Image 1: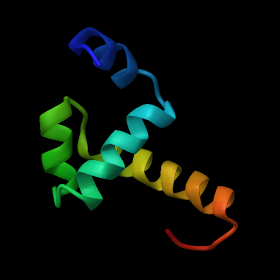
Image 2: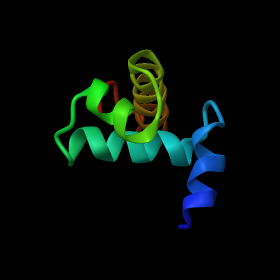
Image 3: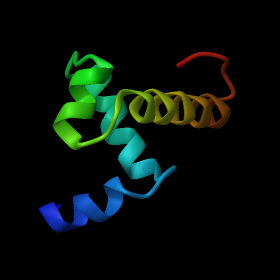
Length: 67
C-alpha cells in the first residue's frame, strides 16, 4: 500500500480498511487510542468510534456478542 493510498483511505469515515488498521494497531500493537490517533492523524474520538464500529461489524459477521 502506498502512502497516497493510505491518505485516501484515512479520510473516509466508516471505511472498513481504515477501521481494521486501527483495530490491528490497538489489539496487536498495544497502542492506546490517543497514540493511534497521533500516529495516523486522527483525534481520539474518531479512533474510538472507528473501533466501536468495526468491532460491531465483526461481531455481526460472526454472530457473536463480543470480539
